[in-house]
Image 1: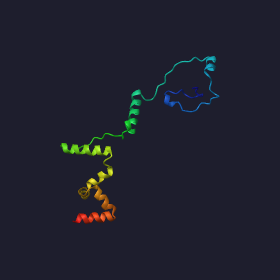
Image 2: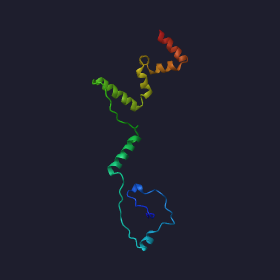
Image 3: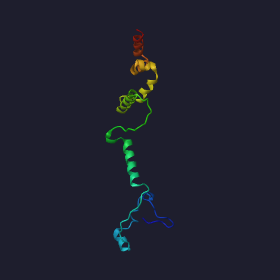
Image 4: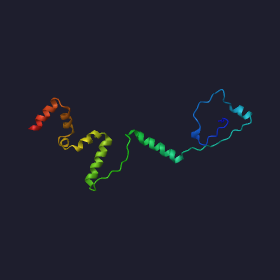
Amino acid sequence: MAEKPGQTPAEYIEDIPDKLIDIDAALTDDELIHGGMAPVQAFMRTKASKNALRQRRSKAKKEEGADGRAPRKQLNLQAPVDDASRAALKAVSERLVDGDLTPSDLDVMGRLDTMRLGIDAHRILTAGGWRATVLRKLLKK
C-alpha cells in the first residue's frame, strides 16, 4: 500500500484502514514487475500477541454459550462452613442454570409469609380476583 507524502508507514496491521481500493488505480502484478518491483513475502506485527487473541476468542465463545448451552459465569461466594448450606447453594445454582428457578423467585425468599404459603399461592393472592378469594377462604379454615 503506497503511503501519501508525509505519512508514516503503518507499524501494526490494525493501523491499516479498511477502505475499498479504486480498481482503476490498482496496478496488475505484471505492471508492477515491469516497473521494476520484485514480489516478496513480508510479515507484519499485530498489536495483540497470539495468546491474547486466543483468549479473546475463548472469552467471546464463553459469553455466547458453547455447544448450544446457556452461557455461564463462575462466581465465588462466601457461605457458612456446614455442608448443608453448601449443598443448598449448589442446588439453587443448578436450578437457576436449568431454568427451573428464576431470579424473581429468589426475591420471594426474604418474605416469610410467602415462603410458608408457596410462590404459586402468593402470586394468586397478589393478583386478586376470584381465585384469591377462594384461596383466602380455604386458608381461614
